[in-house]
Length: 192
Image (tube, rainbow, N blue to C red; front, side):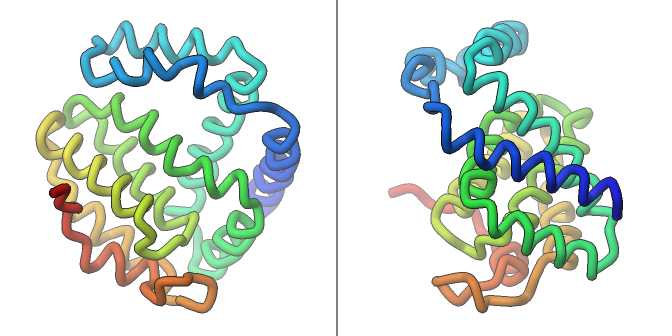
């Protein structure tokens, strides 16, 4: 519990920091559009360049803390997972950047060695507990595509495993579809 409290406290500091600094995404739009074509080395160099900005420095700490927290979340008791979900739900910036974090990290899933990262990213979707909102659907669809088409990882058992520990509650979700139900019924989004 002390480790959870420590990470959540650090995330609260980042929540305030994200309010004070400007997202540098516009400075990297051209590079972002090239990500699908980048080699792993080029992608790592892109992440390194971005980590040198004020936003990037904060983002680097955010990434590390969120990946640590999701590992704890995936192995926690039901009560601890509920506490983590409630805490993250109250940190708007932390919650909002989670799908961008999943997108950033998904490009590192290139083969079966990426399965632990894939599990963590699906776990983040569970942890932020947004139900079936469109961004969650797009993010999980992208993860599904990266896992199946690129890395040749069977993602459905991972989604089922994470669905089983996700929240069935809809009290804070506008769509009325819980994260658990979203994951249980997930079908990749079909773009028209």
